[in-house]
Length: 199
Length: 164
Image 1: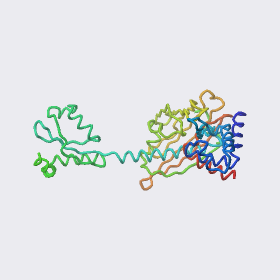
Image 2: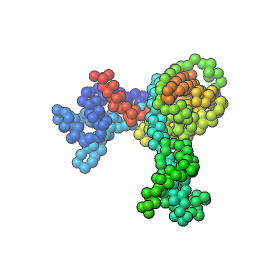
Image 3: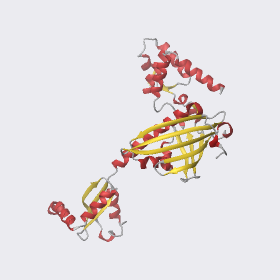
Image 4: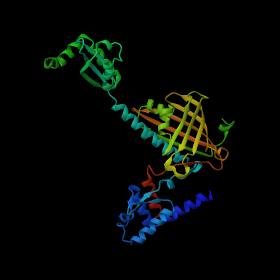
């Protein structure tokens, strides 16, 4: 614990200076060379280098030689401070609930970007259509043509002649059922007629 | 769980109310599906190598956090939590009492907590109420947290204002 306190003293000591705080804010956005940092201050290069030395000793930044330049990067590990459960229990939960929010938003977006498809295949063997639905259309077509679907295995090869994107699986199934009715077949025939003529 | 833990006056209690723009089913799943829990339980820069959920009263909720590369000196440190569900109402209420500790220092780091989660639906959004209390704490109960990835700049700004 003593070591930890010393480390903290160093951190706070080095942060007590306005220029050093300013430097940190600057490099928290991106790593910079000593020269680039020095440009922003009306200080001698040596003075800036000295500030950086203090920051480095406190473990707030790391220095890395890259050719002729010294690149200064913010050192994340010093900011990985130990949280005392008692004192910071609230913060711990606050962070966790924020992450839950980020997670839910991402999940929601991926759900919404997921599309389902109702598709029509033309068998080049018997000239008849096959109607189905799938989440991954490309993959499903490959499966049909690879003979992985037993009901279409002997009608290979297939060509994709028509598809519709639906917002969810339920809508895709409903559309598939419609296509298999008399009205649906007539509708498809109208949509596919141009294709047939072109062929 | 430790006998009589629930009769103790809490040392510390925290409460939150949040609204999430997600259906209640999703939020419930995020709290009860180990695959989903692993993705947000955190803290930042911590991975969740283990998570088990036995979703029934008396069932276990076990989750282990492990410090990642960015946590420097803490890298590899594990903080397990072993909990037992005390109340479950699907998509509405979840309560558990838990013990959490730092691996290898169980004696001085163990804390005992009770947590209640209440979900309700509000115009397609989900309102979350969370109450958590520390009932007992070892003398050296800490967990490392990475402050940089999110909000480091804000922290620094705050510090700036504070120190100026």
